[in-house]
Image 1 (tube, one colour):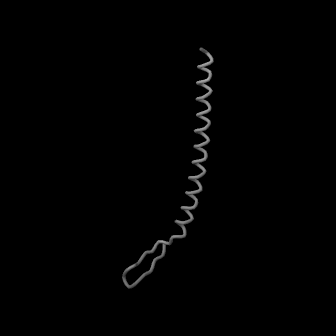
Image 2: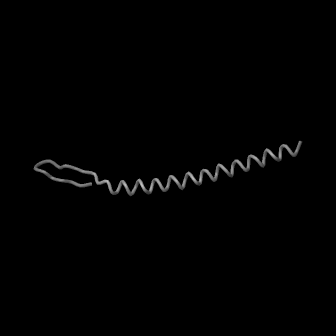
Image 3: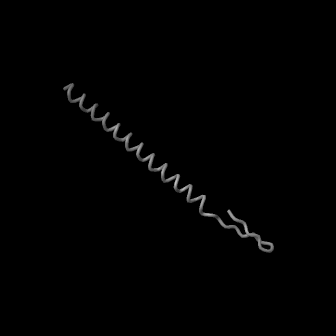
Length: 59
C-alpha cells in the first residue's frame, strides 16, 4: 500500500505486486489440490469396484 499525503488528506493506493504473487501461489495450490482430489476419486472408484466384484462373486 502506498500513502500519498496531500495537504490535510491522505491518498491510498494498493500495489498489485503482492496480490499477483498471492494469485500465483493460490493457483498452484489449487492445481495441486485438484490433482490430489482426482487421485482420491480414482482410489475410491477402485475400492467401490472391488467391493462390487466381491458381492458378485459371493452369489
